[in-house]
Amino acid sequence: MTFDTLVSAFVTIIVMYDPPGMAAIFLGLTTGMTRGERMQLALRGTVLATAILVVFAIAGSAILKTLGISLEAFRIAGGILLFVIAFEMIFEKRHERHEKSAERAVTQDHISNIAVFPLAIPLIAGPGAISATILLAGTFATPFERMGLIAVLIVAALVLFATLVVSDRVDKLLGTTGRAILTRLLGVLLAALSVQFVVDGLKQSFFA
Figure: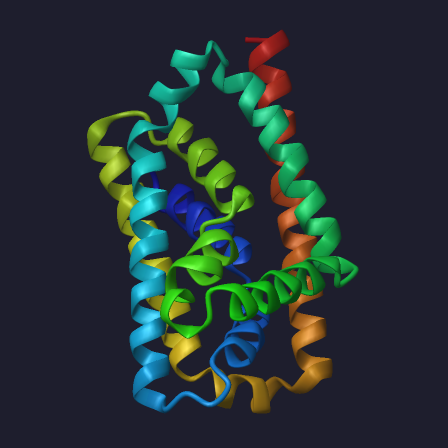
């Protein structure tokens, strides 16, 4: 485990979270709430989502083995999934899909359950974040290295929580154009990371 590995893991998780896009969706979810209520909701959502990802960071490999799936195969499949998410980010499809999930949650479950659905699941700990966590867990093989990955997840969660708390300011600062540009840049970065996962999976499958 090197510093570069930790930085790469942090960037992967942060890109999956997409804080600027998440801030705009969070504002839509919390319309009419006070600042204190927003902070409480952000805290519950990020803690729950992080707990879910930590479980997959620890037990993800064991789950794959139980299902008879090799890590190499999951790297390829996960890389493809992350590339699809990157494509959606670049062309604004992911933001639209998340907004629809948020609208359904407000209609069906209203404010009391928003921290669980859709904030924690699937907006924060969605299929992409879970896949990325399991893929990263394959890189952090030893128990000590897994602690490093868990630390990365916690730091990324703190960054996301801080973004959600000041979501109104972030949204005003970026504006619609700035948010779109930043989300697209994150999408391009995620696309590159996803291709690297596929390349690593192919190398380990055919050339190891």
